[in-house]
Length: 222
Image (tube, rainbow, N blue to C red; front, side, top):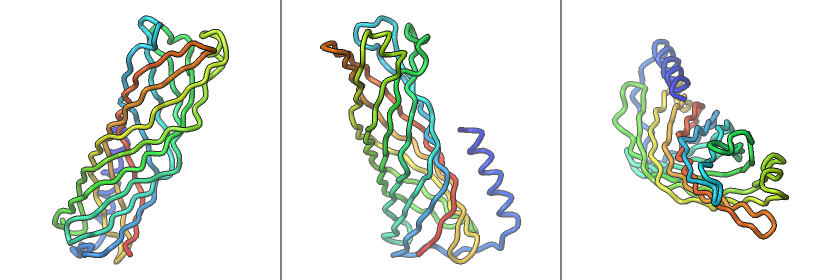
């Protein structure tokens, strides 16, 4: 993720070298819509699966279409929204269960609302930061055959939804009167408890996903 974000900033620098410098702000009442490639890179950790010593799980990354919106309440303050197509993550066994490999898959939507502050323009660069809340909805959770075999039968899995803080930073690069190149990143607090039910046996594991989310895309101001 760090390498990809660094490359994005290098690309932005090359764009800046060929663009006419502009200093126009978005202005109160403007709506900026952006679409691009968004990657969720978990910074994960977990507790033990109930009853299985030294066990733990991890969460793989995924890339989807990202959508963001900023509505300018004033020249500097905006309401921001991060949305996307659903992310799907493999859940990997680790610790004493590592030999099982991928043990489950879960899909989620992570709508995130932020209050943004847009700084004074630096020529045609428009930087901003944001602070807000994320609500992550998990669905379509399924276990793999390797986990079912290890636990002795068909296993149902469910993940609790999560509510947590989100930090945001980004820049919009003005390419023309209304078109922009955007690079943004979020750090999101996502914590969940997974419940595994095999016949009458219920096991749980607490998972801190806490991902970095990076997005590169294009935007249009209405």
